[in-house]
Amino acid sequence: MIKNMPKEELEILSYSDLTELILKEENKPLNTPTIFRKICDILGYDDEEYTNKIGDYYTSLTTDKRFVFLDTNEWDLREKNPVDIVMDEDEDEEEVDDEEMNEENQEETSEYEDEIDTMMEDEDIVDDEELDDLSILSDEELEEH
Image (cartoon, rainbow, N blue to C red; front, side):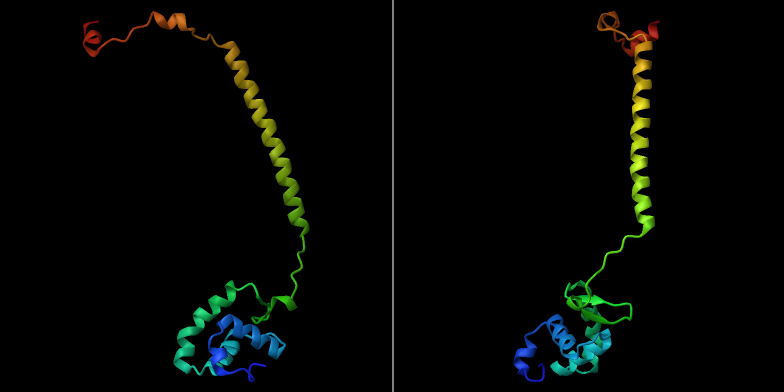
């Protein structure tokens, strides 16, 4: 597959595209250095270029949704490794606990609001007419008294 492609065509492909071709051709998961060594061989990179570019290559793999990093520290095609979502029982309990806490918080807030309402009813509230008799004194007037 890759061996039959002209070098000019291979050179215009991204590292991610080459990785996809390599993983399909190998038909098995491979680790980062092995895949990138194959890419460097295809593109004619020397050891110095391999060393200088492998970090960027790894970053590109981590952001490309076509690949999945396995527990074996190898990369494979995501299409060959469907993701199973498993709910842990503890997570279910946490969700219930969160719901219960929200209900408790609402009850506490309601009780607090009731207390404030009661306090407001009990307080002597100043009306606007009582405020009319008040005046603002300057500092000089305060000193005179």
